[in-house]
Image 1 (tube, rainbow, N blue to C red):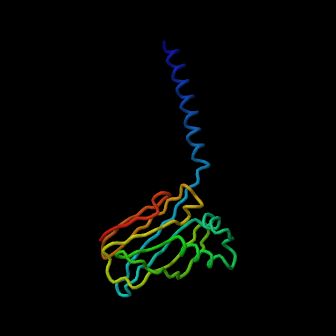
Image 2: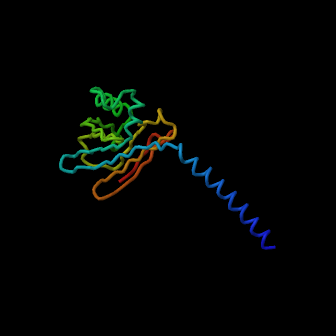
Image 3: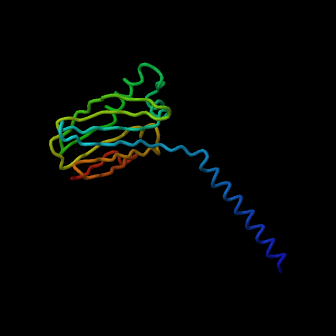
Length: 164
């Protein structure tokens, strides 16, 4: 009886080990596609300041240019202008690219929208990397006059709106 119990436990441990191995292997090749944007309202200048963090190789693949080349920042600027739109209280706002910085595996992109005196609704269209990577998720965290809101974007949900 004890021998049968030990044999069953050994089989159970063997099967559990194999299942654990396959589960761990499934994570080995998974690539995570995301960007994160922080939006801060600067009351004194009536400006929305955007800071976007994305993976260097992902944006490089999307714009098809090496991040170490001179034209990288210009292509990132064009890409962001074509893939990120802001509407304040229903009116479109012009985005001004203020710079980017490559830091290893991360690219930081800075841009802003001026002339924002008060926000009732903020609508954003964010398609950054969505066409290049089907599983891409873009998060946007907004800080406005002490209020915090979060938006997420993915294929099929490229536009989001929050109210303050």
